[in-house]
Length: 236
Image 1 (cartoon, helix red, strand yellow):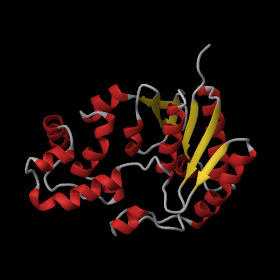
Image 2 (cartoon, helix red, strand yellow; image 1 turned 45 degrees about the horizontal axis):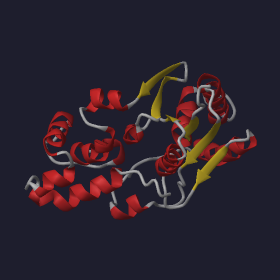
Image 3 (cartoon, one colour; image 1 turned 120 degrees about the vertical axis):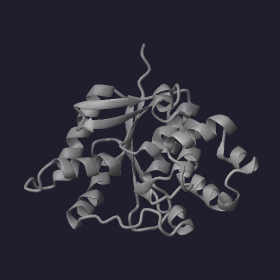
């Protein structure tokens, strides 16, 4: 019998897609779209159950405290914020689990769920639009990215991470630290793009090893901080 996966959902990511995909003339457009997408994912993936992680937008995380510019400039419409407050209760009403914890991002909660499921011998399907979560890809965990609603999905495993970035999934935080991440306001190392970042990691194996070999001596503290910010906290 085929093992049913745990469906691990980035709630904020899916809600944002729903909110911007449906016209505002539809009352509670994020709620309607999120429910439709979650139902469709249930039908497509046939999971054993669903876990949804949510950001706590009212409280800063350790990332914001460690690096002031982190995710600065993000503005949410009141209508979206109102619906984001409602959605965890909707998930619970559907009979699924969710988590929302001050000091942690949804990404950390998803990483914790994946670690738990893999440790018990299970498999996971992680639904998100956030490429930071590529670091979770493994033989037991696939990342599924909505391309057009959920009618078109891109499935990402370790091989796809290697094809896209030229690095292993576990090297993704190092890759982000070097290349930077404009969406999170992480500047990375000046002059280092994706190809150079991948080349450095292929040469040295890790950011730590590259720094130990004398690369970027004036940026060591900053790059180590960017890596810590980019690394998901599965202990959440």
